[in-house]
Amino acid sequence: MKKVYLIILLTLISLVLIVPTILGSTASQDITITAESINEVSLSKTTLNLTITPPPDSLVEEEVTDSSTTLSYSTNNTNQKITVAIDELLPTGLTLMVEATSTGGVSSGPVALDSSANNLITDLSNVSDSGETVTYILKANKFAEPINAKTFTVTYTIQSTN
Image (cartoon, rainbow, N blue to C red):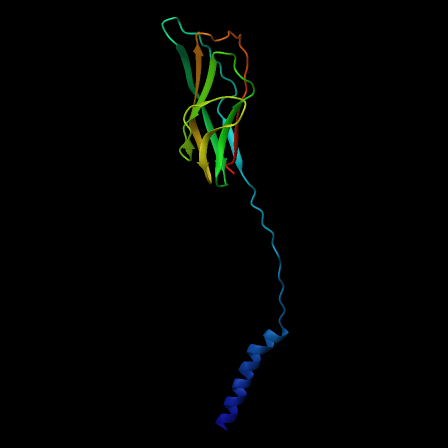
C-alpha cells in the first residue's frame, strides 16, 4: 500500500511540474539598439588678434605667440584625430603655426597652417578632454607683406584616422 501511495504522490508531483510547462506560453521581442557617435571639438574663444612687426635688419625673423585659447574635445570612437586648416594662405613672409596640448592623445607639436588639413592631435580613442592649451605662433620675416586687420579662419576637425 505504501508503494501505491508513493506512486500516486510522485505522479501528482510530476503533473504539478509538467502541466504549467505544457499549458504555458512565451513571448519574445527583438530590440534594436543604436549608440550614436560623438565627435565634438570646441574652442574657448572664437576670435583672436595677432599683431606683428617684421624684424629689424639685425634679425632674420620676428615672432609673437598667444596661448589664451583652450581646446575641448570628446569622442566615443577609436582612432580619431584633430586636424587644423586655414581658409586661405597668408601673405608672403608670414607663417602662422598652432600647437595644442593633449592629455588624451598625442600632440603633433607646432603645425604650420595651410589650406589642407594637418594633424594637430592624434591617437584619440574614447576620450573627453577640456582646457587643453592652444598656442598660436605668428612669424614674420623681413619680406612680410603688410596686411591691415585681415581675418583668417582656422578650422579644427575631429575625424577618423582611417
